[in-house]
Length: 473
Image (cartoon, rainbow, N blue to C red):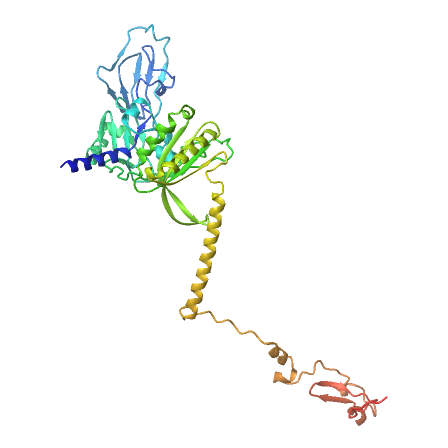
């Protein structure tokens, strides 16, 4: 029985260790001066207006005096104990001359805007304001996170996305936590739930917590483009800006990559970094985010062939990355010194200053990739040769080329097999009848001077004897 209790306690601790709390920042509270167009909460001499065509849920914490109020057609006031409104008879001396003030529109506040969320490891950290830095994808609630809307607060959030649902572990609204699917569906169908949540994607609760001590993937990479659509990036002044996985913008700082083994615990390691380094005075201004990511592996830096899980530590500062580089070096040194006790097998970093834990690492990786690529090509050639020899693959037949001797024979006229080509007709020699009838013009002696042979038509020179073969001078 004791062993069972210990196992359950361990599972609870593992689940709690890898779950973060994401708190929604905006609200639609009456007492929040940023919700009014004049930048101040209305007082007794003011006229209050709510847009007639907008849906709104407004939390009212205390009593307020007004001169006049125009209510929305579709909306509600959530009144705290003792809260309400009353009209001042005459003028309120503490209010001033009085103005007409408009409650701001909250329709455009989107769930997937990372600037509208705060992350914390525990609920106590939320109360104390100890918030964590995260890349943009993980600033929005992940599938294993607990979502918190402030207890004494109203809100309105647009959940529209390309996905049919938004799974989370739990949702806390007005101090009540919902982790049951059926119970939260019932709340969403209520009047208050419809005024607070609107959009095409339904928020669902009851998702199991992360059971892996080394952490779990956030799951928001599928909506990376939508998350980044609401982020405005600024130009960086550092030497070599870095783009962390899951982030929308380049940063000045450093990225530490941790390669882990069984036995690594993400939450314990996060606490170790906090107690060893972040409490030091020189690192007080540092922002650090840590999470598990899946990095794409590429052959020769081009061809993807899978992904590997690793721990990404993003360090950001306001000094062009110099302070982040110093902290990154300390983290890598600690990981290499105590990695066997922490479940860490490797650690390296890159900094926006241009430095890294191994300056030659990129060239070595390139050489390894080239060698691997050459070996792959040679292996493919050998396989093809073996398949051809075994008859599995046949080489395509090539058309035969004419030989030189064949070309020479075709140039011989006698081999053509057709009638002898005498060239063009010469009217003087081939057709003597076309000339005038002159006596003794074509005698037998003249006719014998023209010879017709197999090689063509030629003339006999009377100076030489054609039968004479020995010439003497």
